[in-house]
Length: 142
Length: 339
Image (cartoon, rainbow over all chains, first blue to last red; front, side, top):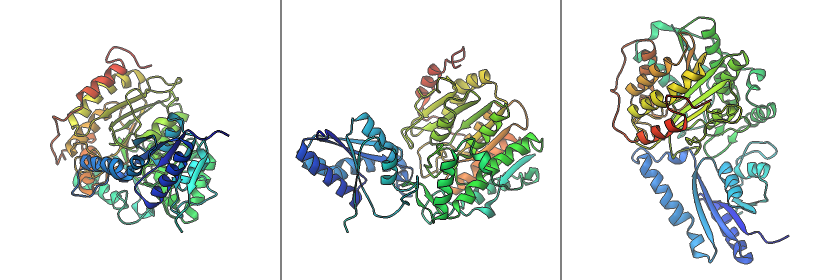
């Protein structure tokens, strides 16, 4: 098996997503792969609070995504791309893997939520059910 | 008469504080009827649950079984937006059943128009995937039931979000014309003007994506210039409306600038698409500012019943005419095109 050329990673600013991105960057650095970081803007992501108009909140999320959540990409000497899309994370990650020729999808796991064994549930579980490429789920820190 | 299918007393889909798709939405929507002084026109329909056979016209049985089991097991987050609790399954059956009851009530000649105040909403739900607060695609279940009876169904979706689930379900179905006006870019990211239907139903999906800040006059222009010619060619025998009210300027989830007066005007336009009385049902989708929901529901229902309630003036002057023009070009303007 040849080394993967593109890793697709879900990022959302959470600790588990940071672990997933760090793992992907380590692998990408070791094998010379590129990393595509994806964040899906869901319905609740639009809810910025009463004092924050929606358009401004969207801009704020975009800034956070580019400047903070994806900062490790810039710090690593790895070819990368960032994608901010509207939709749910499963659909967004599957689409990114397809359109970016992703060889592996990497996500972090909260370690809760969802019910393994059902078709419904967590993002990582749904990805495993529907992806056409390997899915790496980074477990919780402890 | 106004048929009302609503059973807030059976609503057990409470996913916790802080979630905008909350039980209080139903009383707020129903309060619009009183605000518009329409109480005397109301015929309250008995609540009923959609059956497995009725749901299976849209959703595969394995999906329904998995969703049921998921709720029975305690529920949880289906995606970052969409949460189910133990009571969600039964509430979803009541919601889908409410749309079916509304359609059956109209078919029986019990009223001129129906309003369905039920939740969770449905238009994001795909055949085998919940998303965007939606578990069962309520309006699709009713549209599919009508189509099975040989009817030609127009679904107008004026929710601020694109109804990706409804579009996907009827993408290749020539019995259903799906029309959506929605904000873009915005969740769920679908609904481009170039999405016009599958090979079995070319031109029978109509999308008019509008920019943030668009006002009611732009949406009306979309209905008049883009949608009306397609509807005339399709000649629907029924009109179902995915009546989300989150395009209201006060809604916290989106950025369109509509008012209650605009929803009244939209309702009148869509009513004109129906072949006659008793073939129009408005089905609640989104709408998360409770006061905006109350006023907008009241104004919409008053408009289709020729009652005077219009608490907010129509809006105008926002961007988006170029998007309407683009959609008109895609769908052939007034002189053909479509199917």
